[in-house]
Length: 403
Figure 1 (spheres, rainbow, N blue to C red):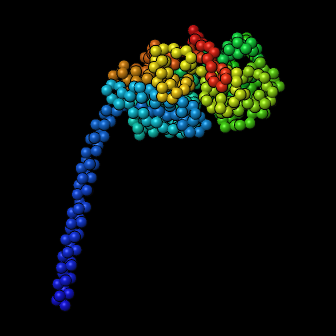
Figure 2 (cartoon, rainbow, N blue to C red):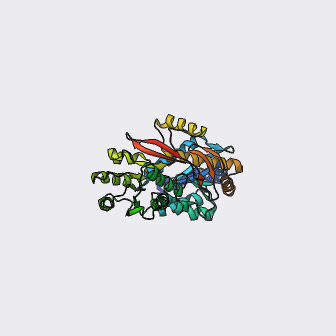
Figure 3 (cartoon, rainbow, N blue to C red):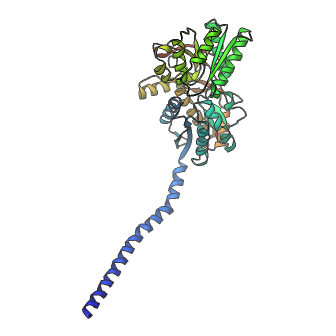
């Protein structure tokens, strides 16, 4: 019994020693962890002081993903060329607005509230930019759209700007092309009724075409469809019976390509014109040979570089991608360098200071042309007309801003 008791006592002592060692070993990482926790905020703060965040919200998934992708290409390319300002690294914070208005508002709120960005770039698609308008204005964080052309994006919003022309000008450009180049006296409208961009541009074309023809009945009819529709037979059949000289059908590239194909299948030998959203490779890929001869207004052509920055942009883009850039890519590039220029002139990353500097942008040399922002924050600049020829977007003409 004594031997057993002694063994038991020794065993208990041994177990106690082991537990103390284990406990001691467990305390050291905890102490290290506490030290790291105490030091981390200081390191993070030091790191953040050396970074200026610029938010980017684009449709990277959903119906408008191809547009968001080509615009983002330009922003990222500009960031590669100009990664610093005021001696600090520029960090792009990119979020997907999922081709949805509600998601666009949510994405903007995240950039402002969570990411604490100094400025925002976006979005392809006027509807998504308009959805972000309240958050931008209320938080007083400046935003600049690359290709969002609807006037309502910047209207009554001192914190929203854009690198592109607006739809009243674009609508007039295409109305003049239809009348002066095609000899059209009667036109029909087919609009993507779920798109603020399409509805707005269709109205501006209508107003301009009636004025230039001096005929209130120059628009013989109109038809509508929704984003995602694939069958346009009914709309086209009705329009065909009205015998217009030309059809103006601004809308998303996918639906527009299908619409043009189906018009050809119905034997409609009528010119169909569109706007800037058509200039994506997807329009050609989906439309194929039926797209040949299609004419649209857009922002930029690589065939006629406008400025020295155009050459810088084209050289870098061709080197990286081994192809020609889309117009919206050039505008994404310009939106970024306009923000960087404003930060330089403001000598500050404070959002209010950046906003004030952006508002004073004048004769700025961008890749897609010389940019002067008017009192609404809209760019006053030329438009380009292109035609699909041999499966490529080919330059036709440049139209200067109307005086």
